[in-house]
Image 1 (cartoon, rainbow, N blue to C red):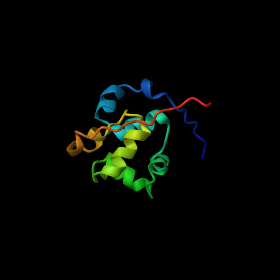
Image 2 (image 1 turned 180 degrees about the horizontal axis):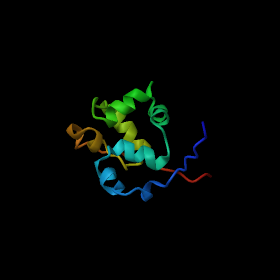
Image 3 (image 1 turned 120 degrees about the horizontal axis):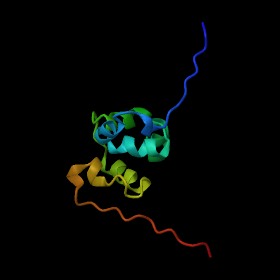
Length: 102
């Protein structure tokens, strides 16, 4: 058996990726831009398993309001609460201020 060399290509090099990208769940887009796996995103959100992230990305499960707010904060508004939970369209998350060291 010969070893095959698998070369990783940048995401932009795939034909038709822009179409695929437009249908991708916002959580998955954010996670891929960061270079995180579902497990890493779950850890950042304080979830017990990557399966919850997968379920939310596949829309098999709805994120709790608490998790939707944590995702908004983690993404610095890139994935707002209203995208994760349309029923919370009027919720606005105030991002923490970054203060300069004294």
